[in-house]
Image 1 (cartoon, rainbow, N blue to C red):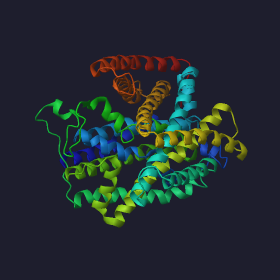
Image 2 (image 1 turned 45 degrees about the horizontal axis):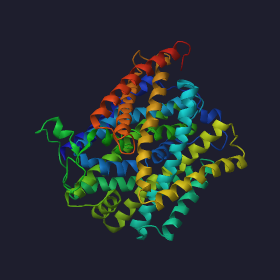
Image 3 (image 1 turned 60 degrees about the vertical axis):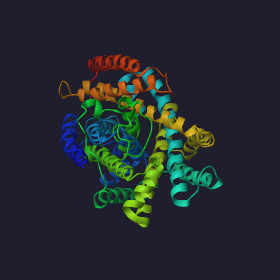
Image 4 (image 1 turned 30 degrees about the vertical axis):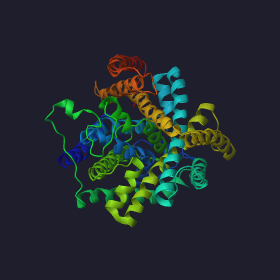
Length: 494
């Protein structure tokens, strides 16, 4: 339990201190925001501070901060330390600066920001890659809440007509949320979703203590090799799979609870509704800290239920934890909270995809007919991916692996764009760009070594993957600041 408590302190105190430091580098002021300047009643819609923050939290918090930590905790209690540290110095920085850069770039979405700061060639690669990721997000975040609802609420197993009906209902909601003005659908329904999410998280948190769940502490008796051991270092649940290394697999597995590139697309989306730059730290930075807290809570709950002898996978653990800690009624609310999370990311992912495609093809989105045409072009491949994932025995596993890796890759692009921006930022400390360059370098190593070593990639020996990944990381460490200095030579950013 001590390690868990230390992790919570790191997350909350570290978030307060480091968030203030990052804000001091950006220096928000009282200038008019895009939500006010460009108000159009569709995408640029001024909303209150708390509504923006709640929508942003629900946008970024998919199944990642639940299913990821449930699997990641099998590496042992080191997860209670790596999750909060990563969230404070990497994930929250990524989210805050992505959102704030959008405010300073007239509400530009992430592809536009990448194009400006990383150049047209990088933009072409990024934009296509990001749209593919958004389609994967739409499919994943239909599949996971659909199956949770079917299995845990209705009691349906496997492929059935009932499951497809549930998928259809979720997709119908996504269609409505993608087409209509943000304040008409998302702005009205999210407070209800937010209440369910927060109630379930609070209930699970206190239930861990009231039920006396056994939470293990880091054991240094075998040195660092024991702390950062092979998966699963902690094997109370009788799991197999020893031989999977902590680096890089842990950080890909626990993506959304630490750093997620998907978040940059959602923070820039909600940036079009923020009415004051000074609300940014609460709306962007602190909502990522809150997601980290959700990840910590579910990691602890999973460790507790595994220590009680559970052999369930991630979906089963959600049901077991909810019912064990909160009883039948409270457990149902908690499960609904978990179902809500991916749905409230899937809708805005597809909305973001619509905006990105429209911006790329210069299609005016004020016209309803144009919005419908772009939306249909997005939903057809999402449905095709979903059908493949459901009907193929290994379909979803393949989908999830590529989704998880792609998610981290998007973050590397965002960190690079932020680094270039900070190099050219007027009045910024000389080495301010390090706050984004260092986490970007770390994650280029993670995604490179993962793809080189993983069976879905090049399947190279781990040591070889480490060496090549390190070389790629060093190149990133050198080339990105060089690009920043080149940009700064002819540009000054506010």
